[in-house]
Length: 92
Image (cartoon, rainbow, N blue to C red; front, top):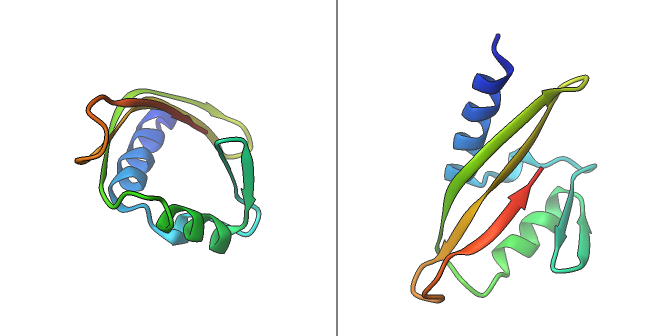
């Protein structure tokens, strides 16, 4: 199976669903200088953000097989009705 095709399918799924089941107890979110650990804490943080809708525009998807698949994503984040310009983001 092509690692890039798997990474691309995962990224498409992740950014359209933001499903809590995609996080594990060992997952970590770094957000504005704070580290949030565990699936429940990450979902709680994401649901407490001051906006309700955002649109991700993916610029790059890089991946490397590493005992699984390591995926790095970068792009733009547009917060609907909040900020007139897109914000840059990256995630691995």
